[in-house]
Length: 68
Image 1 (cartoon, rainbow, N blue to C red):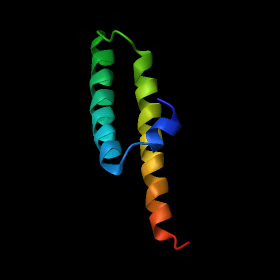
Image 2 (image 1 turned 180 degrees about the vertical axis):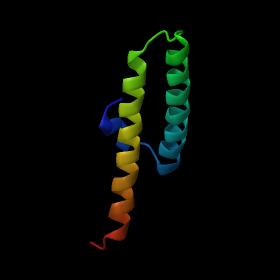
Image 3 (image 1 turned 45 degrees about the vertical axis):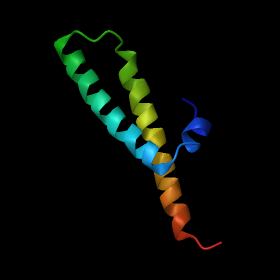
Image 4 (image 1 turned 135 degrees about the horizontal axis):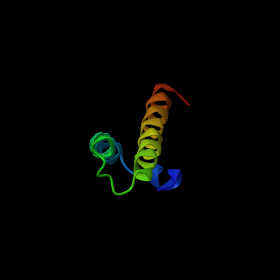
């Protein structure tokens, strides 16, 4: 998902996605260690998605502190 679509999500939806992606990364890494992963490239994609979500949440947090 592109960053533009991530920015359309609410804070609660972003936090939910962060939780889901964190769990998914854990499960994928476990599958890789066991040798049963179907798509090893998904780990990198999930990490990028997690970073995007966390970055957008941090941007919003910093923008709340500003008085325009």
